Image (cartoon, rainbow, N blue to C red; front, side):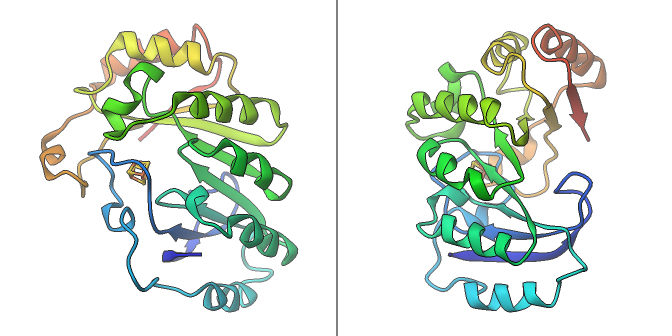
Length: 227
Ligand code: SF4
């Protein structure tokens, strides 16, 4: 695994669990608002070796419930499946974050995953615009179908920038993930971005979010605004 960083403890990233977070290096998207720009391009030297991470994990047995694997895009890692197997075999739960572009790898990892979080970047017709790469949207659709039918706990989530997603786009997203168990809207907050022009971007007002929530509630019962 190309590990770009480790957060040793988190109370927020794995619902109802105390976890450690592994940040993998490399992403196939180039979202302008990305707040982990240092993880997007592969560096020559990973920040942590895989062996070093497992040594650390050994010391956290009985203290942590699980491990969150995020990125970057974890499914780009050649040895992801072996990695999640090894984490599970140590008795930890595993949460996988993904952008949904690798449905085959997602499918293969399912036996070792306890929670999946998939980004929904936009309605399918705007995926390439928002991610700034050519996206095979059949793969996005496949990943959504896999997640909604696999029986594992999951969430979909969207980072919301006012300039990128219109009210009409949220209706299309609602159709795309109709019947989803949980869908989070994440307010964009400018702190660090891949494209520095995005530091001036804004999210919607609370009143506008109320309208977005009511549009999405036509398709999804459990829509949550994440601050
Ligand atoms: S925000 Fe976009 S570019 Fe950044 S890690 Fe996530 S999918 Fe990749």
